[in-house]
Length: 518
Image 1 (tube, rainbow, N blue to C red):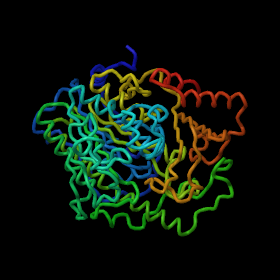
Image 2: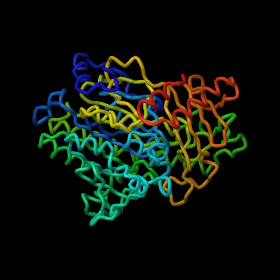
Image 3: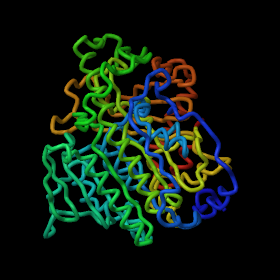
Image 4: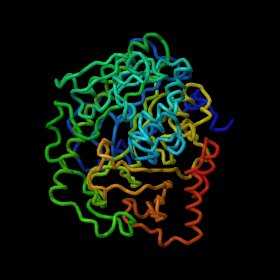
């Protein structure tokens, strides 16, 4: 049987024969080693805490998916419960988002498709956002509808798609709830984490500014309640908890507001240094000012503080799973919609580039049959999560997806073949002041581009035909564009590979395109 159609149950049966292996809990790509960890607790799910026997591992697993907003690799070191999840499961070190921008990335997650197939390339307006996603009838087929049709009880909590507002009706008699979700607790522009509204199953509820109203904590409590009540029913469930943290304005929970005094943005090799030979970050671009550096340090400290509530939530949800007796049959997935740069390449805080700071984000999976402490180097992308969830639910991959199930990679016997590279496509950048990801200084926003990222290099082709090539084996910080050293034949090969990926439709075509270059 092909690894693309290999079901969850068969993989788990094989995995149960094997034992886990150990690995460092320090996340690949982070600067965790030398810095003291915050004095926060790690919540470890204990099998002895279970009140009812866990279902057999061969049963269709429950799925808990925690998606955070703008989380960069360098924040994982401040998240002990995430590092515990890494110890208990597998970390994909070459996980890449299709676009380092919120709505296009989230659309890719829901659909399992590249942006050129979802049609969502921006956060709002005529070529992006919730309104376009809805008008194209995209919500009729997502991983939510997949799982619900398979008999799962489903829930979505937190941030949905840009432009969605809790009271929006979309022609219906009440506040709109998309298809595919049995439980719906979703906000609009709730980035401050206080003084927001949630659509709670078709009823708009307002929250205030008291510590108990802090949004991540509210989502955590609602998610725990969903897990407890659904587990008691014996029905399989899938829940996505999508936090607004640590997106700007980086609001921490009040109890975390004094953590990490003196913490500064990491001074990596790329900090305040423009890449040589860059086609859009020229050598004449001003370096960061003293005021900008100070602001970046303040922002990074706020980001480290704001992810503490996310980390506690993960610990709380895992403990809830254990107490409900379903931890042994639940896949827990942690990731981010995109990364974030803070001073690298002389850029103030932001995203949208093809640098690893922005496109290479954490993906951690723990659950039945996943060997503990594994670090997986294969090139994977957010288009792979929808077919993975379908695989776990015993469903075939939806016909429209561009990605592939990750289940074979989570086994000890990995497939002999996998993709060589994946596509990053960023078009019509967020230059509108109404966009929550708007960057005031347009010089910090790259032109539209398509990029090919493999396990060893990144090739970027801009809208004007200019190209960049970064050899990450010798230049992991991506500081030297060496496209000029490539042969004409190699450039033709790379251009062809990017065109193939940027126009592919469907799993087979996109799979072939992903293997067209090495």
